[in-house]
Image (tube, rainbow, N blue to C red):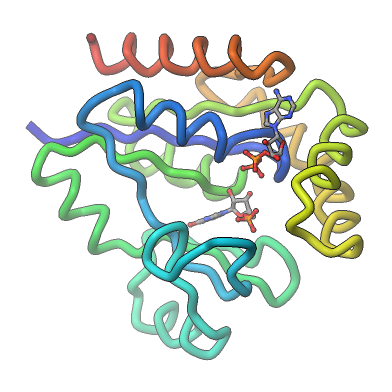
Length: 188
Ligand code: ADP
Ligand code: 5GP
């Protein structure tokens, strides 16, 4: 049987990566879809692990070649996208695939997979708290943090388009809620 699709979207800093990392340790048979990006690696990020890191030119070539299932210019000059081939291969072998994508990408992937997909929006308790988390994470320049916070207001308006919204105030609770939603969707 083909695998299912689990989509996570949220404004940057909401805790999406943290929640996904926890989910992957709790539910068997899930694999993370490694996105491609034209931004530089951050902190300890490694090519082919957190992302495939491409130059903007390489990224544009792959867009032209139709290699992306979806892609977005999430911030000016910074592309993010999902390569079609690895996802098709994982789904065909029955693996459930987890996506960490921006809100527009999340809606597009949900539309492409319909009932085979569960889309979850991770919501921060407030925009102020979001900024605090980005500052505390200490992986972005002050300009990048301003850019991410400015975008968050717009992104929050997408929440009602998702199948479920998890508010990440208390991390333990948000993680528990996410695991329960995914188990329920997968029927286990
Ligand atoms: P995203 O993937 O959405 O950009 P991260 O998972 O990197 O967000 O989380 C942003 C920062 O906030 C990280 O430093 C993370 O440890 C922290 N964080 C995540 N959830 C919470 C929470 N509920 N309360 C406080 N800090 C949190
Ligand atoms: P970050 O730079 O914090 O890793 O990611 C910035 C934003 O890009 C996040 O909202 C993240 O979900 C989104 N993103 C990561 N990969 C993809 C992707 O493959 N497609 C789309 N549309 N967005 C992505």
